[in-house]
Image 1 (tube, helix red, strand yellow):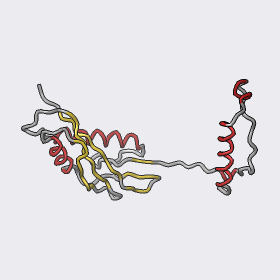
Image 2: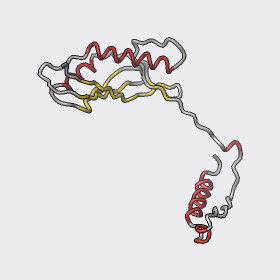
Image 3: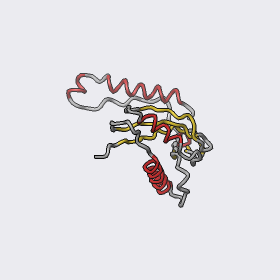
Image 4: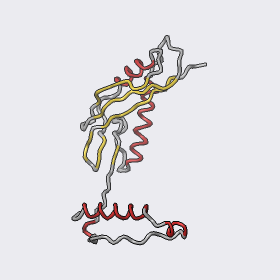
Length: 163
């Protein structure tokens, strides 16, 4: 944009003018007078920014199509199945709830920096952390505008007591 300072000044004047209406304009419910701007924007000054973000995908579910939504659904289902089948409930625990483990998925899709961010006690947090560390270490990395980026991932582990 050629005139970012003038644009900011014009927006400030418009905002200030809108607040500083006369009492007569307020009681008659009429709009404020227009504020003249000192410049005009050319069409080439207008920029539309589009940002495409994609979360990392669990690699056991290989991309089956070009549709990200289908791949994400498959990835989420595979991750849930992996956790459900491998989650061990601590033997001495008598609590229920959700523990959350945070880890980082780097630009190459490798997992690291595991950390427990929510613990319900009874050994459940430690168990969730151990189970998270058993996840396959090779994921499809997250991207922004097609470029791989590091992502912090929060993974909930729900513990329920059997009746």
